[in-house]
Image (tube, rainbow, N blue to C red):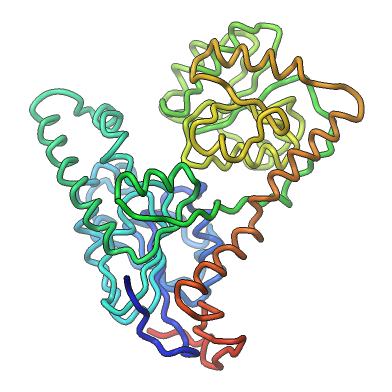
Length: 404
């Protein structure tokens, strides 16, 4: 499917399509690497509410937004315009772009490419709002019942149909994990290569002395299952738990936390890194598509006690760099913590275990991602350098010229 319309050795015109720019999370870290690799690429996104100049990766970049950017309340409530997002993303004019890279967990992969372009989608997940998170989306928007609920359910049904059809416009899928690879096959009936997202492993030290506390960090929303973690540690009053993050569930979680559980709220990266480098272990019970935080914890030398359905099952080695929890329940987590502590050894073994965690995290380092992505794009496009279209290391002298 798909063939680029430039001759070998010709400079490429590249479009990068990202769902939306509101916060700078895991998907945006991938975007940052893509932007660095394709410095002349133009960026397309439904809305961009990042502060001007606040994100170095976006400075000087040509950014195209959709009509949703100008709709009432879009800054705070852009998700409420989900039914309009397929229409919005299809309005982007990609005529003349040779290579399209979509960074997609919602609708970015649904752009309409130039017929001769090659479209590669780096897929975080098939659209969860339309598929397995439909009921949560309805609750969050206040439309779980009533006449409006029926209308929303019909709209989500239509969105599922569009999501499947638009997936067929993609020439090549790249999945963030084997877990998502299976979902892409099941939902879209498409094959996908797996390239794990990039983690900045060099930011973390693994050799700092460990202290006697556990830590978890996540956005405080229901599927992260922080309530389950707090419930488990309430049943282990001799063990200290620090919780980093904020979100709509914060007040409820604070009310249920026992005296041994401290909710620290939002913390800057420096504080999070400090706690990961000192914690006895990192606890994570969400069913994640990949889960960058458990990999970052291992980079910091902290073993991960986590629920292994999803990314944690692929990134955490049971009994070596952490401990898998048998079920997504508080009781199973209590049992896993006990088993983990029974496995601990003192003295030099703690540093050896931290080193093993750090080495496991290096499998997901930025350099590994860049190499795998470069090799994949070279194979897909048939060029040795997908950035410039050069063959056999021959870079075109016009490759650094911005084409408008």
